[in-house]
Amino acid sequence: MRKTQLVLALASAGFASSVFATNGMNLEGYGPIAAAMGGASMAYDNGNAAVMNNPATLGLAKDGNRLDVALGMLGPDVSSPSFGGATSGGDAYFMPALGWSKKNGAFTYGVAMFAQGGMGTEYAGTTFMSAGSGLPTRSELGVGRLIAPLAYDVNQNLTIGGSLDFVWAMMDLKMAMTGAQFGDMVSGLGGTQTYGAASGGLVTGLSNALTGGALTGVDWTYFDFSDSNDYTGKTKATGFAGKLGFVYKITPQMNFGFTYHSKTRLGDMKGDATLSMQVDVTAAGDTALFGGMLGGATNDVTVPLTGKIRIVDFQWPETYGLGLSYQVNDKLMIAADYKRINWADAMKNFKMLFDADNVASNGVFAGASMDATLYQNWDDQDVFMLGASYKASDVLTLRVGANFANNPVSSQYMNPLFPAIEKNHYTFGVGYALGNDADVNFSMQFAPEVSQTNGSGVVVDHSQTSWQLMYSKRF
Image 1 (cartoon, rainbow, N blue to C red):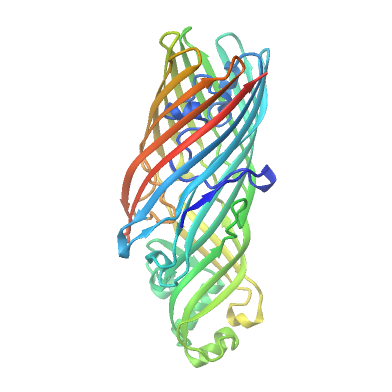
Image 2 (image 1 turned 60 degrees about the vertical axis):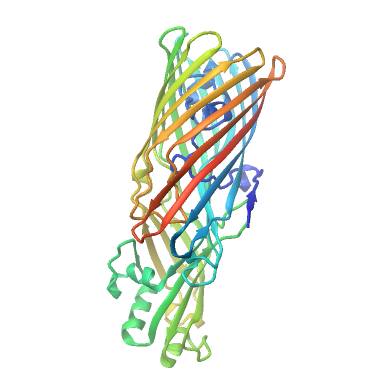
């Protein structure tokens, strides 16, 4: 089923839809001016999207106010031909953006809200992704920012800038594991912990039951913290981050820009969750493990444990960027950027801590916890962006670009729920002036299909088409 998500909520409700992966989990470009030029944005005026690119470029604007209202759409096409095949139904994700800035002499300041990035997939319960549970699986991550920027013209050649960012993150997850996959995470059951690790009182209880004969098997496990709401995630966290940057005019035609984005300081994402297990128990195990809640059933019994989930220390990475812009003549401008995204530090592991409710019918699992870690081991990502802008007439501007990057996702640990494996993007766009004080800008981005095979032999194919549209008013 096609699912289209449109999030037009205020910051308190999460002004960020789930954004599918492009440069890892970042967009390939912020704002249609930069996006149409391959994401290159470090050294020229690209509007209020500067708050996501290089805040110093806000100072390149003319005196006065600027208001930008934008909407973007990402259309991922994700599928796997493995084990009977699976196709993600998450194929359209919409993102709003809003920014205002005012240049007053040497100072430029303002406020903006942008979707930072994320990822999302949805698979039916009839695919291999359900691990035999028959239940749907999905992921939905959205990260947004409320940004307060400030830029200052030190002199006619140098502008410096920075921003303080209030950051929020939201996540939904429905994830199934086969009994073998879950067992691999438990060293006490002879698991090799190839793809992750699990420990805690709940795991100890399962281990004791299996070795003691009360439990004869675990068929599958299912993590569920998802409200299926387009406006919020089941788990949420807030925190802060910051950006610094400068633009230096090397010659009247050439600018050099540099920016640094700090790693976020988000709290743990928290929310209600259910951990379900299909188990096989002996008659004695029914009472010993679950306090008689199974009613004497012994085979293929689903036991739901309710409780609280925490996504521990999920952060957005530190980023460095630099670039050049060159005004060839009064019609043609070219730009080239390089960006380093330090995913390796932020995406080493995905760690969940589940605390079961203290319910008597849960038997030995009452109040127990499980610490589950899925290994990620992403690589740092190098992104090269090239773009050109050509003023075809007084009202029409044409843009084209390309964005080249390595895939940061580890082949060993790539999960079809989180296939952030795209590498290259090809872009174009147009700008049209609506008089002297307003304009519209549009960009289209295409990422050709890439494939990756993980350590379990699962193949994921991923291509993507996206667009951004922005209306700007100066006053």
